[in-house]
Length: 470
Image 1 (cartoon, rainbow, N blue to C red):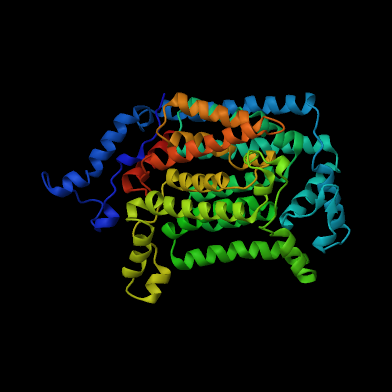
Image 2: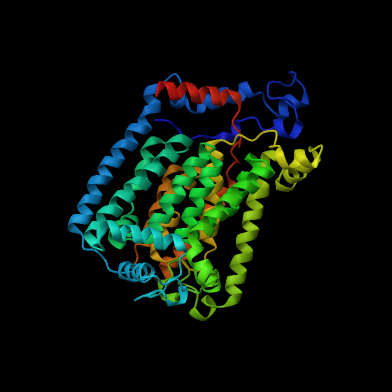
């Protein structure tokens, strides 16, 4: 059984010292003690992960085979749920009413409503659910089958991310299939969160393969279905700064903005203020009764601006601290990295067009930064409704194995989170427990060593060899 990756053994001094990757410090020198040679680091890594070496293709296939088994088993489980578990009516009728208004030609967002209230999602939502209604004729059972397929597509994408990053032992992939609440969100509730997160995971797959421009387009498509995907945006932007030139970042963001404009054209041309104010409203206050994470806070404080501002400050501060001390640790910190981009440029043209000296990011680093950044947003969210569990459930095993907690503690924390999300209605005790578990996981992520962010020549060669073996 392969053990988890510990990337802290990788060399970390190349970028800070400007020394070529191929150079190694002289024996007995201060540099030899400060930064061990790459060969020694790889040797230690090989000892820690003996089952993941390219010489054992059978062991490398084990996660893939287990992932395939999980997909087949979960497909059978989803079929049984659709066939025998009653559908729960929550938002489907409202979605269909909003789609009908749009298809009848209404483009004023203040007049597109359902039985649960006005439309509050960007335009991509309307296009997606119009397509779903066309395919299913608005019938719930047919839509459940479609969302069952969507569930399996999403699971496939997530399993691909996990297998490629090699953070978890193969057996822990099974945790991704064990959530009662997430199965319900997909095939019994038919929420738009499912579509948004599937697109988000598709964007992440493209990004870990360094398809940044296409990944940003798919990411923008996910935002157009539901804005919770923006919780990933700060992390994604920082990764882009590390991997792309300033010109490349600008073009990628321009493409993402173009998607939003293209999808919103019918509404922007006719009722732009109504569309932007409704579809991109960041100041909504949710109902206290439905809060899963802050039910222990009295309602008068829950709806207060002071709590909202405090959580926002904590969110931004935590992101900044993680960025400076964790995600940019090997570059000397966020501010040193930004300063070096300007210092090393000989001209404005070079500053805009040149990538950083090291710019090929490892898959583990990309997934870690994006999952942790989103999780920080989850911890700081004023209200999490039951369907919001899908925003971060699929990152939980990855996050837990990025901590240094013993395996039994990781499992306990995973079960505790799942338990809290299955208490209905939520109570002060269940929400307090969930908040506490979130903080414990966040502390574990902070106290764990930062992974080495870049791919070196040896890693690329090993990756090609393993790909041939597989």
